[in-house]
Picture 1: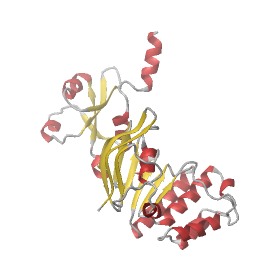
Picture 2 (picture 1 turned 120 degrees about the vertical axis):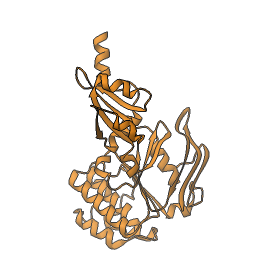
Picture 3 (picture 1 turned 45 degrees about the vertical axis):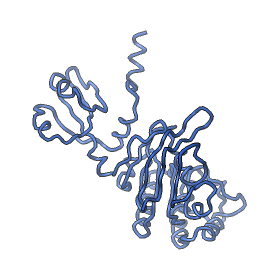
Picture 4 (picture 1 turned 180 degrees about the vertical axis):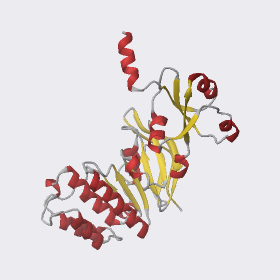
Length: 301
Protein backbone atom coordinates (compact mmCIF):
# COMPACT_ATOMS: atom_id res chain seq x y z
CA UNK A 1 0.00 0.00 0.00
CA UNK A 2 1.23 3.47 -0.91
CA UNK A 3 0.84 5.55 2.24
CA UNK A 4 2.22 8.73 0.61
CA UNK A 5 1.74 10.00 -2.93
CA UNK A 6 3.01 13.30 -4.30
CA UNK A 7 2.22 14.49 -7.82
CA UNK A 8 3.94 17.59 -9.20
CA UNK A 9 4.01 19.10 -5.72
CA UNK A 10 5.30 22.64 -5.41
CA UNK A 11 5.51 24.76 -2.28
CA UNK A 12 6.35 28.39 -2.70
CA UNK A 13 7.08 31.11 -0.14
CA UNK A 14 6.77 34.36 -2.03
CA UNK A 15 9.18 34.04 -4.95
CA UNK A 16 11.14 31.19 -3.39
CA UNK A 17 10.28 27.60 -4.31
CA UNK A 18 10.98 25.39 -1.31
CA UNK A 19 9.72 22.37 -3.27
CA UNK A 20 9.71 22.19 -7.03
CA UNK A 21 7.76 19.44 -8.82
CA UNK A 22 8.01 16.61 -6.30
CA UNK A 23 6.80 13.26 -7.65
CA UNK A 24 7.09 10.17 -5.47
CA UNK A 25 5.25 7.50 -3.55
CA UNK A 26 6.12 5.67 -0.33
CA UNK A 27 5.19 2.20 0.81
CA UNK A 28 3.82 1.64 4.29
CA UNK A 29 5.87 0.14 7.11
CA UNK A 30 9.33 1.33 6.12
CA UNK A 31 11.87 3.58 7.79
CA UNK A 32 12.97 6.23 5.31
CA UNK A 33 15.84 8.64 5.85
CA UNK A 34 15.11 12.10 4.46
CA UNK A 35 18.51 13.53 3.58
CA UNK A 36 19.66 16.85 2.18
CA UNK A 37 21.61 19.98 2.93
CA UNK A 38 20.19 22.78 5.07
CA UNK A 39 17.51 24.61 3.11
CA UNK A 40 17.01 21.75 0.65
CA UNK A 41 13.29 21.47 1.41
CA UNK A 42 13.23 18.51 3.80
CA UNK A 43 11.23 20.19 6.57
CA UNK A 44 8.74 21.71 4.12
CA UNK A 45 8.19 18.30 2.53
CA UNK A 46 7.56 16.56 5.85
CA UNK A 47 5.26 19.33 7.11
CA UNK A 48 3.17 18.93 3.95
CA UNK A 49 2.76 15.23 4.73
CA UNK A 50 1.80 16.03 8.32
CA UNK A 51 -0.87 18.49 7.17
CA UNK A 52 0.89 21.46 8.77
CA UNK A 53 1.32 23.18 5.40
CA UNK A 54 -0.66 23.18 2.17
CA UNK A 55 0.99 22.68 -1.20
CA UNK A 56 1.02 25.64 -3.59
CA UNK A 57 0.31 23.40 -6.56
CA UNK A 58 0.12 19.69 -7.30
CA UNK A 59 -1.38 17.15 -4.93
CA UNK A 60 -0.28 15.44 -1.71
CA UNK A 61 -2.11 12.33 -0.51
CA UNK A 62 -1.53 10.63 2.85
CA UNK A 63 -3.69 7.58 3.63
CA UNK A 64 -5.39 8.43 0.27
CA UNK A 65 -6.59 11.77 1.70
CA UNK A 66 -5.44 15.37 1.44
CA UNK A 67 -3.55 15.93 4.72
CA UNK A 68 -4.06 19.68 5.24
CA UNK A 69 -6.59 20.35 8.05
CA UNK A 70 -7.60 16.68 7.96
CA UNK A 71 -8.51 15.15 11.33
CA UNK A 72 -8.03 11.56 10.14
CA UNK A 73 -4.51 12.32 9.00
CA UNK A 74 -3.79 14.28 12.20
CA UNK A 75 -4.83 11.42 14.48
CA UNK A 76 -2.70 8.92 12.55
CA UNK A 77 0.33 11.16 12.03
CA UNK A 78 2.82 12.69 14.42
CA UNK A 79 5.48 15.26 13.56
CA UNK A 80 8.39 15.57 15.98
CA UNK A 81 10.94 18.36 15.80
CA UNK A 82 12.88 20.61 18.19
CA UNK A 83 10.24 23.35 18.00
CA UNK A 84 7.39 21.38 19.55
CA UNK A 85 5.06 23.38 21.77
CA UNK A 86 3.34 21.79 24.75
CA UNK A 87 0.96 23.39 27.28
CA UNK A 88 3.40 25.15 29.65
CA UNK A 89 1.52 24.34 32.88
CA UNK A 90 1.39 20.55 32.40
CA UNK A 91 4.11 18.36 33.88
CA UNK A 92 5.91 15.85 31.71
CA UNK A 93 3.84 12.97 33.09
CA UNK A 94 0.64 14.89 32.44
CA UNK A 95 1.76 15.46 28.85
CA UNK A 96 2.19 11.71 28.42
CA UNK A 97 -1.34 11.21 29.78
CA UNK A 98 -2.65 13.64 27.16
CA UNK A 99 -0.80 11.68 24.50
CA UNK A 100 -2.58 8.54 25.66
CA UNK A 101 -5.94 10.29 25.30
CA UNK A 102 -5.27 11.60 21.79
CA UNK A 103 -3.39 8.85 19.94
CA UNK A 104 -5.38 5.61 19.51
CA UNK A 105 -2.30 3.35 19.31
CA UNK A 106 -0.43 4.99 22.21
CA UNK A 107 1.68 2.59 24.30
CA UNK A 108 1.69 4.08 27.79
CA UNK A 109 3.83 1.37 29.36
CA UNK A 110 6.50 2.04 26.75
CA UNK A 111 6.25 5.81 27.33
CA UNK A 112 6.71 5.43 31.09
CA UNK A 113 9.52 2.93 30.64
CA UNK A 114 11.46 5.28 28.37
CA UNK A 115 10.64 8.19 30.68
CA UNK A 116 12.32 6.38 33.55
CA UNK A 117 15.21 5.10 31.43
CA UNK A 118 16.19 8.61 30.33
CA UNK A 119 16.03 9.94 33.89
CA UNK A 120 13.10 12.36 33.74
CA UNK A 121 11.37 13.64 36.85
CA UNK A 122 7.59 13.50 36.97
CA UNK A 123 7.06 17.12 37.96
CA UNK A 124 9.45 18.62 35.42
CA UNK A 125 8.05 21.07 32.89
CA UNK A 126 8.91 20.80 29.21
CA UNK A 127 9.91 24.47 28.97
CA UNK A 128 12.60 23.98 31.66
CA UNK A 129 14.38 21.08 29.96
CA UNK A 130 17.80 21.36 28.38
CA UNK A 131 17.94 20.97 24.60
CA UNK A 132 19.12 17.37 24.84
CA UNK A 133 16.48 16.44 27.42
CA UNK A 134 13.81 18.20 25.39
CA UNK A 135 14.73 16.16 22.31
CA UNK A 136 14.70 12.94 24.34
CA UNK A 137 11.22 13.68 25.70
CA UNK A 138 9.92 14.56 22.24
CA UNK A 139 11.35 11.28 21.01
CA UNK A 140 9.43 9.39 23.71
CA UNK A 141 6.19 10.99 22.52
CA UNK A 142 7.01 10.10 18.91
CA UNK A 143 7.79 6.45 19.61
CA UNK A 144 4.99 5.83 22.13
CA UNK A 145 2.34 7.34 19.83
CA UNK A 146 2.82 4.47 17.38
CA UNK A 147 1.24 6.57 14.65
CA UNK A 148 0.85 4.97 11.23
CA UNK A 149 2.94 7.85 9.87
CA UNK A 150 5.65 8.98 12.29
CA UNK A 151 7.86 11.87 11.23
CA UNK A 152 11.06 12.84 13.05
CA UNK A 153 12.68 16.08 11.85
CA UNK A 154 16.23 16.17 13.24
CA UNK A 155 15.04 14.41 16.43
CA UNK A 156 18.44 14.06 18.11
CA UNK A 157 19.34 17.78 18.35
CA UNK A 158 21.33 18.32 21.54
CA UNK A 159 21.52 14.63 22.47
CA UNK A 160 24.88 13.21 23.43
CA UNK A 161 26.19 10.12 21.64
CA UNK A 162 25.01 7.66 24.31
CA UNK A 163 21.46 8.99 24.34
CA UNK A 164 21.35 9.00 20.52
CA UNK A 165 22.33 5.33 20.43
CA UNK A 166 19.65 4.47 22.99
CA UNK A 167 17.12 6.40 20.93
CA UNK A 168 18.03 4.43 17.79
CA UNK A 169 17.77 1.14 19.68
CA UNK A 170 14.41 2.03 21.21
CA UNK A 171 13.01 3.12 17.87
CA UNK A 172 14.18 -0.01 16.08
CA UNK A 173 12.95 -2.37 18.81
CA UNK A 174 9.48 -0.82 18.83
CA UNK A 175 9.35 -0.66 15.03
CA UNK A 176 10.05 -4.39 14.84
CA UNK A 177 7.28 -5.05 17.37
CA UNK A 178 4.85 -2.55 15.83
CA UNK A 179 5.73 -1.71 12.18
CA UNK A 180 4.67 1.66 10.80
CA UNK A 181 5.89 4.23 8.29
CA UNK A 182 8.69 6.35 9.76
CA UNK A 183 10.36 9.31 8.07
CA UNK A 184 13.45 10.76 9.67
CA UNK A 185 15.65 13.65 8.63
CA UNK A 186 19.09 13.72 10.16
CA UNK A 187 22.62 15.07 9.92
CA UNK A 188 23.90 11.86 11.53
CA UNK A 189 23.39 9.49 8.61
CA UNK A 190 26.43 7.39 9.47
CA UNK A 191 24.92 6.71 12.91
CA UNK A 192 21.52 5.79 11.47
CA UNK A 193 22.49 3.90 8.34
CA UNK A 194 21.44 0.56 9.83
CA UNK A 195 17.99 1.95 10.65
CA UNK A 196 17.07 3.13 7.17
CA UNK A 197 15.41 0.89 4.62
CA UNK A 198 14.98 3.67 2.06
CA UNK A 199 16.67 7.02 1.52
CA UNK A 200 15.03 10.10 0.03
CA UNK A 201 17.61 12.68 -1.03
CA UNK A 202 16.22 16.18 -1.61
CA UNK A 203 18.31 18.89 -3.22
CA UNK A 204 17.15 22.44 -3.98
CA UNK A 205 13.51 21.44 -3.66
CA UNK A 206 13.74 18.47 -6.00
CA UNK A 207 14.01 14.71 -5.49
CA UNK A 208 17.61 13.87 -6.28
CA UNK A 209 17.37 10.21 -5.33
CA UNK A 210 14.76 7.88 -3.83
CA UNK A 211 16.37 4.50 -3.37
CA UNK A 212 16.64 1.47 -1.12
CA UNK A 213 19.47 1.55 1.42
CA UNK A 214 21.09 -1.57 -0.02
CA UNK A 215 21.04 -0.01 -3.49
CA UNK A 216 22.55 3.22 -2.13
CA UNK A 217 25.46 1.26 -0.64
CA UNK A 218 26.33 0.05 -4.15
CA UNK A 219 25.36 3.22 -6.01
CA UNK A 220 28.90 4.52 -6.43
CA UNK A 221 32.45 3.26 -6.31
CA UNK A 222 35.69 4.99 -5.35
CA UNK A 223 38.63 4.79 -7.74
CA UNK A 224 42.24 5.80 -7.19
CA UNK A 225 45.35 5.62 -9.28
CA UNK A 226 47.89 7.50 -11.32
CA UNK A 227 46.60 10.43 -13.36
CA UNK A 228 47.66 8.91 -16.68
CA UNK A 229 45.67 5.78 -15.87
CA UNK A 230 42.67 7.49 -14.34
CA UNK A 231 41.82 10.39 -16.63
CA UNK A 232 41.30 8.40 -19.86
CA UNK A 233 39.25 5.82 -17.98
CA UNK A 234 36.99 8.50 -16.45
CA UNK A 235 36.08 10.04 -19.80
CA UNK A 236 32.38 9.65 -20.56
CA UNK A 237 31.55 8.28 -17.11
CA UNK A 238 29.22 9.75 -14.49
CA UNK A 239 31.80 11.23 -12.12
CA UNK A 240 30.33 12.46 -8.84
CA UNK A 241 33.62 13.64 -7.31
CA UNK A 242 37.21 14.00 -8.42
CA UNK A 243 40.30 15.23 -6.62
CA UNK A 244 44.05 15.16 -7.05
CA UNK A 245 45.48 13.46 -3.99
CA UNK A 246 49.15 13.86 -4.79
CA UNK A 247 51.55 15.04 -7.44
CA UNK A 248 50.44 12.33 -9.87
CA UNK A 249 47.50 10.65 -8.09
CA UNK A 250 43.76 11.05 -8.56
CA UNK A 251 40.80 9.89 -6.50
CA UNK A 252 37.33 9.84 -8.08
CA UNK A 253 33.85 8.63 -7.20
CA UNK A 254 31.78 7.37 -10.12
CA UNK A 255 28.30 5.93 -10.43
CA UNK A 256 28.60 2.15 -10.33
CA UNK A 257 27.27 0.91 -13.66
CA UNK A 258 28.28 -2.69 -12.91
CA UNK A 259 30.01 -3.10 -16.26
CA UNK A 260 32.15 -6.00 -15.14
CA UNK A 261 34.21 -6.10 -18.35
CA UNK A 262 35.27 -2.50 -17.79
CA UNK A 263 36.21 -3.20 -14.17
CA UNK A 264 38.40 -6.09 -15.33
CA UNK A 265 40.32 -3.75 -17.65
CA UNK A 266 41.12 -1.20 -14.95
CA UNK A 267 44.71 -2.35 -14.55
CA UNK A 268 46.44 -0.36 -11.78
CA UNK A 269 43.32 1.54 -10.77
CA UNK A 270 42.11 0.52 -7.29
CA UNK A 271 38.44 0.24 -6.32
CA UNK A 272 37.00 1.07 -2.88
CA UNK A 273 33.61 1.33 -1.23
CA UNK A 274 31.97 4.74 -0.73
CA UNK A 275 29.91 5.45 2.37
CA UNK A 276 26.24 6.21 1.67
CA UNK A 277 26.55 9.51 3.53
CA UNK A 278 29.42 10.52 1.24
CA UNK A 279 27.42 9.57 -1.84
CA UNK A 280 24.66 11.93 -0.69
CA UNK A 281 27.20 14.72 -0.16
CA UNK A 282 28.73 14.23 -3.62
CA UNK A 283 25.30 14.18 -5.28
CA UNK A 284 24.34 17.52 -3.72
CA UNK A 285 27.66 19.38 -3.94
CA UNK A 286 27.91 22.30 -6.34
CA UNK A 287 30.61 21.98 -8.94
CA UNK A 288 33.77 23.58 -7.66
CA UNK A 289 32.22 23.80 -4.23
CA UNK A 290 35.07 22.33 -2.21
CA UNK A 291 36.60 24.40 0.57
CA UNK A 292 39.99 24.31 -1.14
CA UNK A 293 38.48 26.32 -3.98
CA UNK A 294 38.08 29.28 -1.61
CA UNK A 295 41.75 29.29 -0.72
CA UNK A 296 42.86 28.82 -4.32
CA UNK A 297 40.70 31.80 -5.32
CA UNK A 298 42.24 33.92 -2.56
CA UNK A 299 45.76 33.20 -3.78
CA UNK A 300 44.89 34.27 -7.32
CA UNK A 301 43.71 37.76 -6.32
